[in-house]
Length: 241
Ligand code: PGA
Image (cartoon, rainbow, N blue to C red; front, side):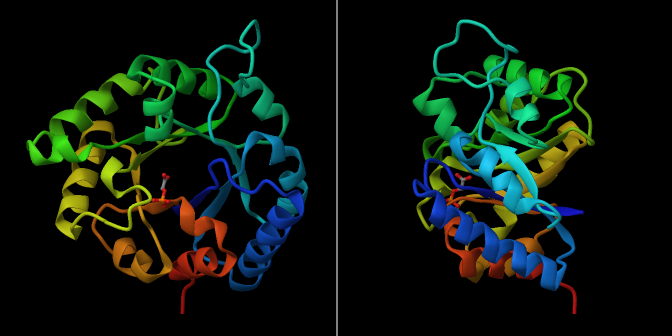
């Protein structure tokens, strides 16, 4: 089953607006029954509320990050045990924004994923190259390092999905060529045996074309997941008939 994930990032300050967005998406999913899993990743503050909205709709709930420890003196952090308690089935780890703004290394990401797996939470582990790395022809080398160093032992296709997100495609409106995406996905899948989804400027306008690229088993959507119509049209790519 393909997966379409909505990464709201640090957006949706007003609960009332977030409810309205989620309700439109749940209505669409209930009515159209897309052949994909749909997972919503709101900010931590909304997890408890959004969970109620997802109830009985078949949509799944995820958190955008987790700490690697269960609890302790980590001011401002949230553990995988805590997000499990709130009903999260998924967590994103290693997003490039976490890697760059919070200096997260492959080693930290590996520990976070291990903690999530321990609590029965599925991980979406993000990997992807910078534009400089692509220009220097280092894409596969970078992906190999990120994939091999970020996956804990105990990783399997039931508990982990990889998101290939070229950093230069995130929030820029620029996406790689189809053959570049296919090459990266095939490489990651061969290396890990895991499902690979694509992220970076996914929009309703390019979702159909992206969905048919070999090795693309779903999408991680940022900006376009904040607009109900846009996001429903992306999910709509997986509605049969
Ligand atoms: P974008 O973000 O869809 O806004 O490019 C994707 C992501 O960062 O996961």
